[in-house]
Image (cartoon, rainbow, N blue to C red; front, side):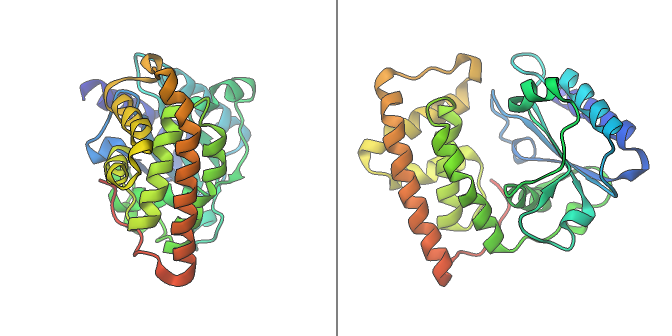
Length: 270
């Protein structure tokens, strides 16, 4: 963890330097605080500010993160979300992200290092996880700074991700397979779980013919980074059918929630 801790410290210093007194809080969340960092896991950070970043701040922050985040090997990938507190407190849906940095955005950020604010439904899920289990790097505890997101909006945000996941099954197979299982788990149980915990919940509940795709994705998640990812041809060909099956299960679970059968959301990630 020494290398990870040093990388987190470097990102914290960059955020504090760029945002200055406008920074209200900075939290580490996701796998790093749940004790589940895997070979391809990102370092997930959430910064809360008093006001929107100006163009120069956006460029300085993105340029610094492009150096500190690892696109493969070496430093871990960093995902940083910046939110203006007034954009999420009081809570409204969809929430608005002031800046998002992630390795999948690297090509776009190299072309334009001043990304604009944008609505981001998935922020409802991320804020919930950070509020429940975020580690303070700067500022007050997360349950004092972040909003309590209504259960219905957490469910809406998870379902909103499904069309994009279905579109990514062919090109980002591991992530799409695992995240679909996580969406289903969240809707069915009311718990926001880690990807491996969600996969463990989903596996015995799938038909036998659908389990090998998820089992292989879980093995990759636990054991290898994206550069070492491999799929037997037969399993990759089964991935679209797996995804369609999960989409149907998600739709059924979402229908139950809409009818008033939602589980109590959320609980801390595991």
